[in-house]
Length: 338
Image (cartoon, rainbow, N blue to C red; front, top):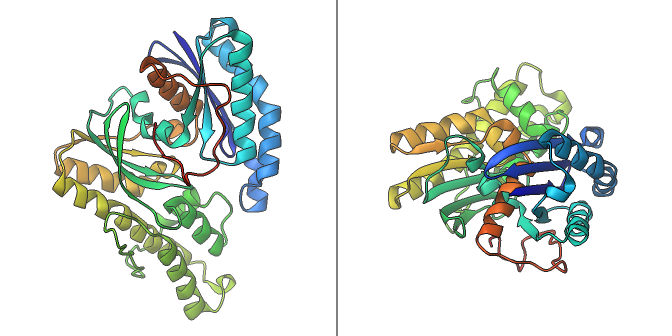
């Protein structure tokens, strides 16, 4: 059975093809031009998806050595994401489904990330504790099965990825900020400044707005404005900020592991590529004698392989969807999970 997964929720156009649990192709076209604007411009993102999606699907089919007529299931990200960007991939997938007479499976983008660990040779075991850390979402989840996911905690304001980007911009770095913060932090002293780790009403939730503001206030009080920060101090600020984010993320993981039983721990999402977060999560999992799974870097960010995998599982579970299924840009008034 050949499943194609199409991802277009933000600034990557991606196509993945899976055949009987074997990944045949995973094509990703990143929209690098957003860097000059300091963030993603939704209208430009949508137009770029329109230009890229057809040739990318053809390239994935060629690499997989299958014809379009041999595709059995078409999956596409339905949300959350940028509405214009989502509609490009979702509408194209519906068109393929209608023209080929094959099932259409809309996939929740977050669910794609949650199960991206299954793209690895060493896979998570149910139930597993999953920390989702991406540009727009931070979630702590108990993944009990392919179809049963319990939300334990989430961010009440900024996601960790957003905080990385905003602090990077404050420090004069280009978008996306996460990789730049990580690179700079390697040269810094993480104990230079003790930035705060927020406590929420629900002690398993997250908040990153405060630490972002704390960095701004520190810079203002010590240097007046960001342009006056000495170059030799920048790595120390970056390292101190990163330490606070890692502590916030992993503190809640420890709380849950002390209270509930799991077979494995998984770290997923774009920010999961951060080595400091990976190292701390691995250390925690090892201390509890649990298997630790983090996807390879090409599966941490947005990709079509995770959408194809999720579409396959939903199809095999007997899920059926109408071509009238709409894109959803946010999670308000909508369950995250299938």
